[in-house]
Length: 380
Image 1 (cartoon, rainbow, N blue to C red):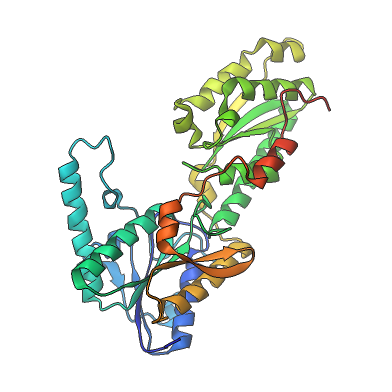
Image 2 (image 1 turned 90 degrees about the vertical axis):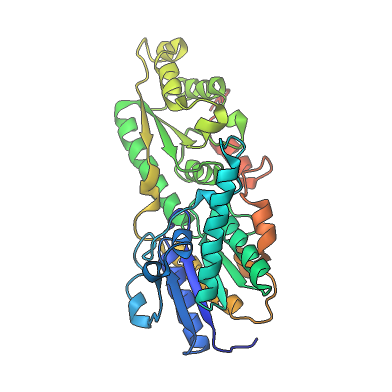
């Protein structure tokens, strides 16, 4: 592996994920360990910074002291953001030509900025949208300048839905925060004999809701990929079974994406009304309704100090990303992944093509959930 002097850009894009700072720190330290003359350029505000005014959106001449103390902080200290216009025009776009023109303008600015900074390669931390946006920019760069741009991705999203890796930065922290909220809800539900609907993050994938439901002992859960989990009548039947079995606390975990996949934006409130007005539940409770509350954990799951597991994963991925981005034999973009406990490089185009990684019917966690969560005919 050739370790010539290189200039590497690093950016965090998309939703923030606890552990991003640890990955930046690890990549920086490894790059400098390879050669003290290696330079690191940090982009502010994610892809927005890359496609913005250079004088206010990048930090160069970074040294070790600039990154001290960031490993314990949540979020990303260089900021993040999204650029929806980097995607192709959506089907319902009222003016596809204007969208495409704007997309080209953004791409052109980013490409010129990359060239102007004389970068040898770029490390991007983010999820599905960030990878697709950066890959689009990378392809445009190579077409314009007829030379490759080394691109290395680090999976960082609390949704844990990046194809090709077993885990992504931020998931463990978000899972712990979500389970903590679930446990607190169980305490108050237990005291009052109530039902709670806990809406958690997860727009297209239900990994967070699924893992939190299992780890936190939820009564049942709803995820966007599996229609049977959010069939209102089936969910109601499971709640009836819990009441019949004298559960004092009933917690339903729902991924936010279920609102869209079910076609009901007000699904939690619909479900709450059904539970509180159900005659069978009243009969089981001696004529009393089951009070039900809707709770949304939202962005709280993203915040806070990263767990040790997230910082460890981030440090490993950042270290290996630095090795990859300075590897002059690397001809095609890659993502650094963790598979069965081992670091590996996965072809970037495969990651982009196959993401997001959704919860499949055959997932072992689905099998576990079916066994552990309540069923409508539960008899023990």
